[in-house]
Length: 379
Image (tube, rainbow, N blue to C red; front, side, top):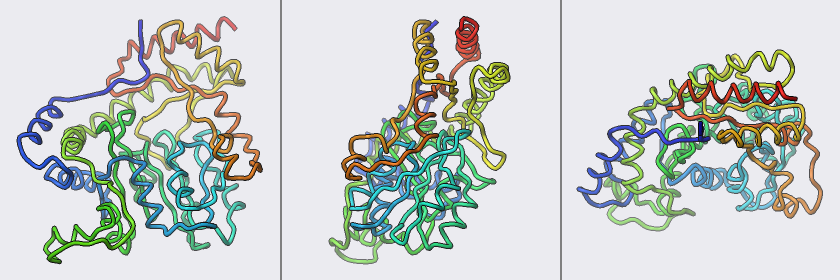
C-alpha cells in the first residue's frame, strides 16, 4: 500500500468558481470573490477586520510594517518554526531572539519567554504549532505588562481555538496561511487579522502597495496616491475564487482531520504507554484543527530508522523544521553567538510527522499504525 504524506481535498465548487471568475473581468485582486472570502473568514474567526493576502508570509510582512520595526528592535520568536515567522521582522532590521519550546506541543516556552524580554523587545511572535494553541492568557498578560505587541503566527491554525476564541484574534495581529499544505487551501494565499482598530487603515494602505486606493474605491477621495510603505499583497480573483469554495467546506474538512488525529492517538497510545514512543498532546484550553499528527522517539537514530522503515513500506512520513537558531542566517545575524535550546534541538531531531489529510481513510491509518507497531516489535 502507498500512503502519501498529504493529498489535496477538492470539492465540487472550486472549478466552477474558477470558471465564474474567468467569465467575469478583471482577474486582478479586489473583486467579488475576495470580498466573499473576507466575509466568510470574518464569520469563522469573529475577527473585526480581515484582509485577504497572497500568503501567510505576506501577512507577516504587513505585520512587521504595522509594528514599526526598525534597526535595534528585538523580536522574540520560537526557534522551532518556519523562517517566515522571523524573516519579516529581521528584514526590517530587528534582532531575532530565539525562545525554546515545550515538548508536549512544540509551542513557545512561556516560562523562558519572560526571561528574554529586554527594554528593546518590540514584538513577541507566537506560533500555534500544528493548530494547537499557545497559552495565550499568560503571553498576553506578560506582553501587556511590558507594553509589547503580540503577533500570532496562525499559519497552521485556521479553525482552531484557545478557550473558544479563534487563534489569530487574541494578539494585536494574526497571520493565517492557505498554502496547499494547510487544511483549507488556495494554492498560495493567506489572511491578515487586524485586531487593533487603530491599525486597520494603515494595513489597507500597506496591502495596496502603500497607496490609499481603498479610500478611492470607497469614494472618499477623487484620486489615490502614495502614502506609506507597502507591497503587492492582494491575491488575484482566481486565488480567491478557489479559496471561496474551500471555505464553504471548512467545517467538514476540519471534522475529518480531527477525526483522523484522534484515530492515530487512540491506535498508538499503547506504544506510548510502554515507553516506545511519545505522542503530541493537546492542552485542555486548546481546540485543535487536526493539522499535524506527530510522534517522537527517544533518539534521532530511532526516528530516522522509523522514517526509513515506513518509507520502505510505502508510507511517507516527514520530519519538520531545522531549528532557526541553528541555521546559517541565524549565525550571520548573531555574530556567531547562538543560544542553546535543548528542547527545540531534541524535538527537531526526534519527531516524525505522520500522513495527514482530510480524506485519509481508516484503512490507510490502520496500515500506518500497523507498520509503526511492527517497527518497534523488531527493535
